[in-house]
Length: 609
Image (cartoon, rainbow, N blue to C red; front, top):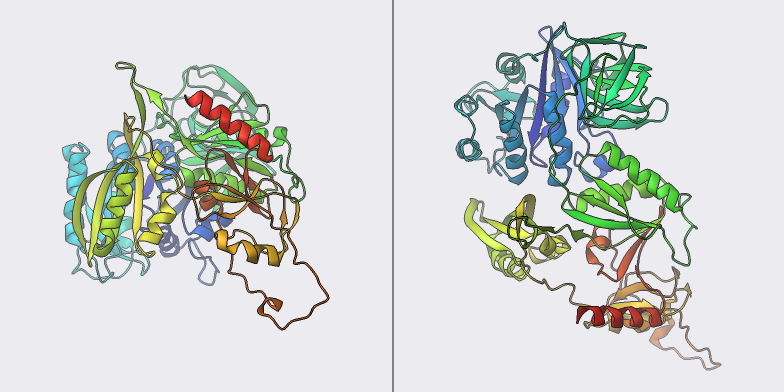
């Protein structure tokens, strides 16, 4: 069968997954009466809850007797590694851009990768039915972006469609008939070349994604570059330098047909398939016939910029809520994640119970922690820190710099510029973006952005939108002030009491409710001053035989400040940890005993001098 392989790439929330839904429906993949979930490609719980795509996924449709393999990719910068590796599987890309927001940082990042691979893009300007749509201006911005990314003449001569993925139509112009997505299907068949393959050569396939199946084990997905493969045949996996990794029998050969993977007996060159049967082969390895000696080239992946320490939960109430608590279990799970996710790097530390996990950003690491938590793990994680490096020529210390694009109401632009300037960000561009909003572009050190997002939403009354992407490594920009307030630390273990919390409210906002199990060293609230304060949340009211009709008979507490996992990770300082269990998220001091904390503080001050 004639084949086309395409990827849909765009910034987060621009409508990729909704578009794939409509492509599946209009190609006849679903039955007329079939019940299909909205955003059917976002299959796991976290994707549905957060409304974002986290993992790249394949599907396929048939249009006019041509099989179109479609790869739906994540739009968030933290999951850019998912996009980078799948670009080698496809022969064309659909660049989807919001008609109001225009090209944003992630669009620029992924399009640059696609253009360098020589892929010819199709531009789809989505959401043209929005009241603030500016389709023609966005079209000009995309052309300028392609030119800035050094696209060749063939790539600059890109075809453009205007569409509304939600309503399920695409058209050559804004004035054309708005009927269905057939103009997009037809354009893919005309513009995207069929895969260049060598059917007469032996079987070779580059692994681009890896997942685990409870029945099949490792499932490796990639595009067959040459030859054909049959189920139950013996093949081998070789590394980038041609070293043999393992030789095995393919237990299952799966092809993508609509939303499902179906077992097939044989797969030909050019098709995207998944194979099971390997025990150690991973992403970027080549699966091939036994006689093949040379591996397929794989694209280098940008390095991680942020690291966190994952360690065994050693709090006094550890092990009560999770069933996977040992360092061996945590290490095995992290190493498995490092195998399948090329953007994450895991290494052991000097402490046998702690592991350093490096990734692209707070959201990516937060999603990993949340996934582990739902699998029954208990662990403690430290504050994110950036990965510095040394310039080989000058010997200077360098740190990751991110490009930050902020859309805010004009009234709030001043406070955003002030706050980011304090965090060593440099304002590069400021322009009106329509609808009374201003678009600000900064170059900011990654260090300065840790923990800023919550503050940003408060400053802009929840109306601001911030997008960020790794820009480059730049010169170290000096110290950045951390959290201004200290914390309230529990002095005893027990169950928190309403009277004690009411008494402590003058000291600062609480993080816990009454009736919650606390322990010495656990952080229960924020201090109004810049110093930490040890407090007793277990203090009960003294009982006497005197009865009065005073107000304290019915104590009314201010509702506590509840933190999500990402907020807790962004909130903590270097001497604090977030304790994560399947049921709870707690914040604690690294040293639970106050004497140990004083000793550690003195040692840190001495080493600083």
